[in-house]
Length: 138
Image (cartoon, rainbow, N blue to C red; front, side):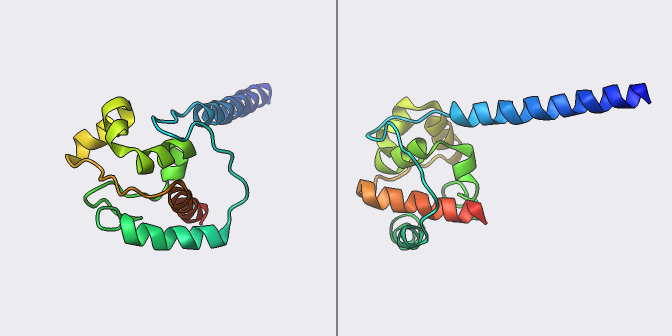
């Protein structure tokens, strides 16, 4: 019985450390290079997400799909892999991101196609981010 308690205690400790480590990793995600240095996210805004869906379809869907690799990477789960600042900087500043951000460069090297600068506004980029958040929340 004692071995089971010790084993269970050890397992709980590992889970707590793993969760804490994951939270630390998310907090330490790179923010990229561009105009967005900090971004405080609040509750998901369904109206903004719907605007972002329309904006995504207009500017991004020629190269990106949500659930499948296409010319660019699939975007489902992107808000779990990247900081919100990084996502917005990649949308707003892809040329510099590819040159100065390691992750953006690795994506370029993998897909062999640079992300096109669509010259969207910060408001449009924020709505696209909200659309991504809504997909990842489901």
